[in-house]
Amino acid sequence: MLNKLNKLSFVIGLFFFIISLLLLANYLTERDQTQQINLYVGLLFLAFGGVMMLLKNTEE
Amino acid sequence: MKLHFTDYLIIAVYFLFVIGVGFIIKKRIKSSNDFLNSNRSIPLWITSLAFISANLGAQEVLGMVASGAKYGIMTVHFYWVGAIFAMVFLGVFMMPFYYGSKARSVPEYLSLRFDEKTRALNAITFAVMTVFSSGISLYALAKLLEVVLHWNFDMSIAIAAGIVMVYTFLGGLTSAVYNEVLQFFLIILGLSPLVIIALHDAGGWSTIKTQLQPQMTHAWKYMATANENPMGINFISLLFGLGFVMSFGYFCTDFLVVQRAMIAKNINAAQRTPIMAAIPKMFMPIIVVLPGIIAITLMQPALQSKGFSIPTNEAGELDYTMTLPSLIAHYYPTGILGVGITALLASFMSGMAGNVTAFNSVFTYDIYQAHFVKNKTDHHYLNVGKMATIFGILFSIVTAYIAKSYNNINDFLQLVFSFVNGPLFATFLLGMFWKRTTSDGAFWGLLAGTLTAAITHGLTLAEGKGGWIAPMFVIKSGMGQAFIVAGFSWIGNFVTTIIVSLLTKPKPEIELRGLVYSLTEKPKMAVSKWYTKVIPLSILLIIITIILNIIFF
Image (tube, rainbow over the protein chains, first blue to last red):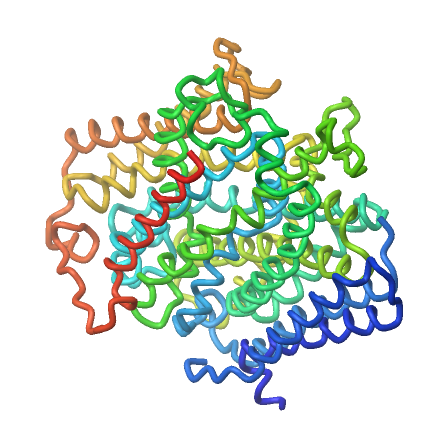
């Protein structure tokens, strides 16, 4: 895990993964019409973060 | 706008990550070369995204949205006229000299091609420009925090500058570049939902076209004369001032952006850095120009029920700089609001850190080592680089207060560029492509160009600025004035350099190998796939750019 922090793609992925969890948590705790955007953006960030974390960047 | 716990938490996570990157990179910093040049070891995808992110600072994000609201779709000229062609030119023609000469900075290339006095002149003007640019980023952020979070302006400056100082001090250029990539994704992914929601709310592009004056939705149609369009310039001034002098001056000679390409692993990657960066750059108007156009549409009488407005300043004029924060406040609820604010913070940090890391390299190599303390240990220059980082940020704080007096920060920045970058491109163009250019020609040409810029600014008046010699010519916008100042300064430099060069003795040809186009063997690339080749990629980019200009003519 610590070694992976040396990979920029993993760090970026981890950042978006954490932000996505915060957005989704906010959506679940405050369910109203205005929060729909948090759900969509949260899912988008989750997917992007996941892909970046799993990305194998041999160049780095 | 009121932030809640989740919004503050998102901002805190971001601060934690950017500082964390500094700590991770710190372990890799062993020499001044690591700190100031990243040891030329950065992969292409990172250098390309850092290249675009370095000019995606607060002045671009806030400033271009402001210009979108003020001037309409003409603002796209900063991309489709004033960026892509210059980035392609940098990759194809200029990077082989910058990278191949093994210069550590743009001023150092000037010392190899010309002499030390030309290097010193460029290094000093560049250092001044970077702290101005960094100060504008700082001002933009502090004003944003003041309005959005109701933080004290002075306190905001201190906190924001402090965070940038920590991660650039710890990890130097690599830390700044890595954070720039994170910031790039954050800006794009954080602001894209805003564009989609606001565009939908405004009724789409077709409604925008019906609600606004046609001058606001056509990029070229009203450029025949200066009086027909909101920017107050004609197509000749635009093509020459922005499309040639300012854009080539910025992208081809500004060490802040060129540095991102110079740290690539090899010459092919260095050449492809600006070319790959041009792909996202081409579509950046969707993120930074379109919101401004949407905002001004939402303020039209037919859409007033939407309840959106851009705040006014003390003079009762629209404060265009606040267009983007106002859109975020209007459309983003808690949660994504924190992401939007963090994206703005990221744009500030990206711009400021980029300037500071360019400043510390130029100060250490081209001012301190070249003219004051030579032949010291590498550890000594590493410490000087770190101290320059601290002083660069302190100077930025001073310039942030100077920037406070302008209502459109982008106009202010363009004016600074026109004084420094405008004349500089003439020096590089002649230096790289005309072997007869002499050191004295370059030096006096640069001085004459900057002097011409000052005189032109002193004789022209735009939005109450300039005209300090005599306001003989009135120009409609500050942006138009910047183009004209840049254009005249380039001509001043170009003509002076040629005249002085013809009257003085050139360097022997043997000393110019690798520095002048006609005397340098062209690099042969051992790459097979077309998309890794510089020329096919460049041609494709130019074709797409021309098509975009035609679509929004």
